[in-house]
Image 1 (tube, rainbow, N blue to C red):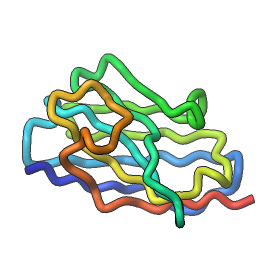
Image 2: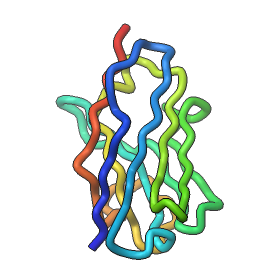
Image 3: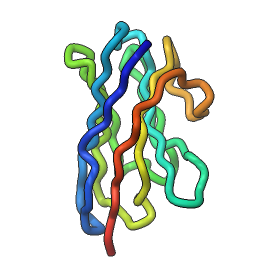
Length: 124
């Protein structure tokens, strides 16, 4: 079992920044690819970003490429999502997820463990 706890969400104005964190516990964190997904009200969960278990490769949705950066610190068992130039359409609940020895897939069913989510609201 892997437990994931997200933090760092909140309310920010358009153009602002937030950094989300996801702390993992329970298994060897470095063996897991980590992904960020989001879900807005009335919409399906969508892929945001992912980082390979080895940390060398990242994957981004086109909608966030160039604005968001995913990173991981295996010594702290934590994955981060730095979100810059935020837009109102980025408003959603953001979830982190873990995929054992994953390559950083954008497909949510590849992920075995999920956090409870953190709300991000971007105002006009």
